[in-house]
Image (cartoon, rainbow, N blue to C red; front, side, top):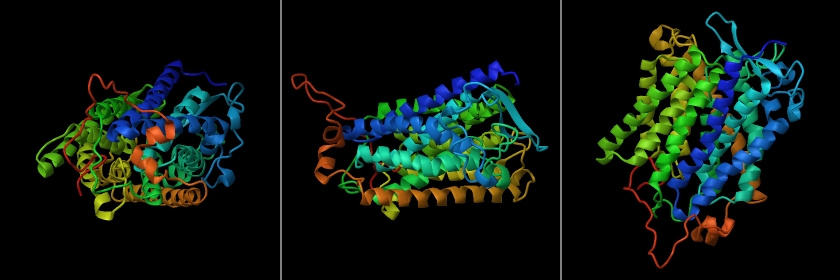
Length: 458
């Protein structure tokens, strides 16, 4: 049995904890963007996804994502191979040479860590991907139905797509056959631009179409009730994202250091890009725009952080920040109620970051491929386009079918009167804020009408 690298193991476990923190961070980010009467439900949807996906991951999700590909086709892993963590507590499979990719000469890049450390790390990816979808249907979906949807969607959509994108040949052993996007198409997605963000964004769009518009949208103002909470959430997401991206190197080495720097500078550039668009369009830069730009940059650099140099990361960040700031207005043009801009930020940002690898990738970065600007022609670009397109189509189609079946059976949407009264009180029998009538009433935090928030003027 090969020796475990204790330094790499420590980094992976610490990164797993950082990625775990991202889901509560997302809960705060989304919670602050909703109205005061729905903030608890919004937070509960993130925590609910964390709970149910965490259990399913241990039971069969990890095996479905990283087990040996059934039939060698690269479509789905053997669901029974590691079911219930079989064989991972001791024996030859408990320590794995985890393959994270290939160097420019085609040799697998492998790190020896306990396979359970890899299980924990990837589990957090699965949890937050499902939680991301909730922002598209804020204020109006039954909590019980959300949990059912989360479990089914993770099983039929996320786990297979994670196999396609993250399971390299040999990922958990020399004989392991992985997913088709990673090994046959060879599209680059270092930490989840397709598997996480395009996947969740397409799902959010499909589910929003099934559930329908909020009562009063888009004519009734639905302002964020707590912008400081949004900023706290964005800060927690930014911190945790270094585990998300740099942790995906699965080692404390040059790869993780490069990814760390690229993640940071791209996010800074994206925030500036978003604020510039706001300033030019609306005449002012906002705190919500800053928080949204941060998230847009994090989304866009996620797939590309190992393939570009810092200058390329800045370019991707600026493009993503500006593009997402404009894209959040699409819901008004096309009439779909994506409450918290999951489509405009995660779907569009994920597409931008994935495709721009084909433009800005350089062989001097750890990914070792050349994009169009560095003499690589269209070779990598077409791979990125195919990878993004297939994940988007698969996720949207399957999510729409899942949502439609649930909508027609157990029902997805809360009652009209319950929605008006507020889902926190009617579904959870709780209120986020209790007021003392003797000391005066609470005044919620509003914001100017702008595109790029949970609600903007048409």
